Image (cartoon, rainbow, N blue to C red; front, side, top):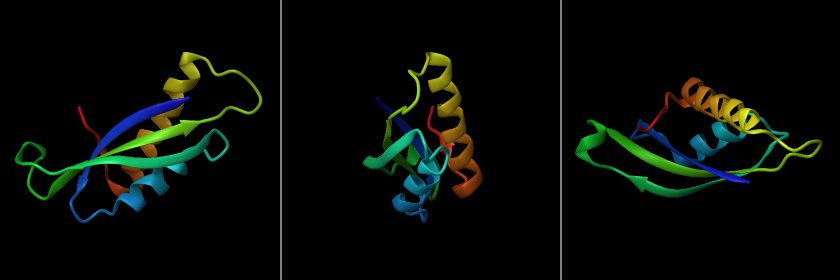
Length: 90
């Protein structure tokens, strides 16, 4: 399964740092993270950019429920916030 996220980060943050932070949220379930869009515009705020990522999720021992996916999404958002100060784009 794949899930997309878009984070607003400082313009100086490298996309690789974002993918590493997302991957670090759960190395057992997350099998890959790739960037598919970078956007910069006045609507994001000064010196900010949006980086959109696709997260590949592969459970190995059970079928995940929607609640499991929501918990994993929360871990990804929290880890990105903690590691690089990114916030989920609303």
